[in-house]
Length: 295
Image (cartoon, rainbow, N blue to C red; front, top):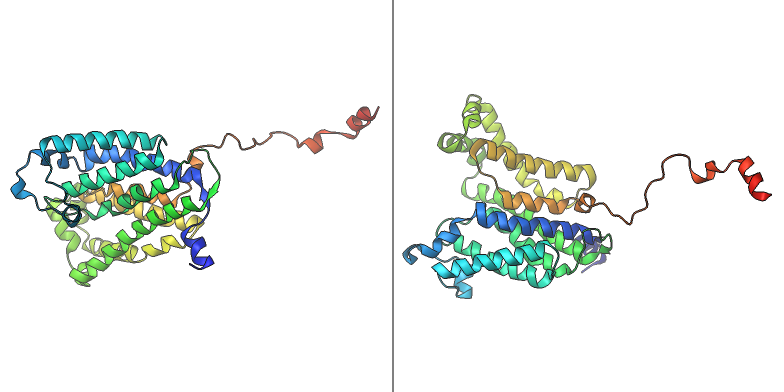
């Protein structure tokens, strides 16, 4: 690996950035099993005739979920996620949570479609434990932390960019030039979406804008500062709009967008020197004061 590629793939970033992201991701795991993919729990009481395991479960020979299986699995997820979120046993708790969630998600998607919005968070759960201990106020630069964050960022970008590739592969330019959004709005649109149908040009322009946004997503890996924040805000805004129009949220992917942000700023560093208000120490000592001190 060349020096330049190494610096790009494993930049030195504060350990606190990984610590905060780790807490966010593992707390989201609890939300996921309760709100995003809760149907995986009911699969323990679902007929196995409907069970068509995804490739991961076939390769690992994982059994079809049973009544007791999903309950034990849920307990393991909750305990390991809480421990990892608190920064305790980062490797053991983190990888335990990762393995348990892979079991949970592969169970959830072995009865229906596979949601691509979980790709980046699977990567996050796999790589964050590699960093080891990291405190919320630890500003120590770490290449291991940078590597873990870069892996999550690549997972986020891959999700967006490959989505654009899939649109071109299966729909071609007709995906953007056709009535894709119109069909979605008619089928499951909210009141706002129904209102938007009165402006067909806006619906069509939105399709082209989304395709362009996804195609340009790799730029997130190279821009910095305000351009990066604007890019993250654009994708977050897209997900908010999607939820407002058709009630699709992509929350697991939205959470992983945080990997692009300086999360350590959310937790003030108590060891940082405080700014002194008022005159500087040099200005405070007047000539008269110097004379008094010399007596």
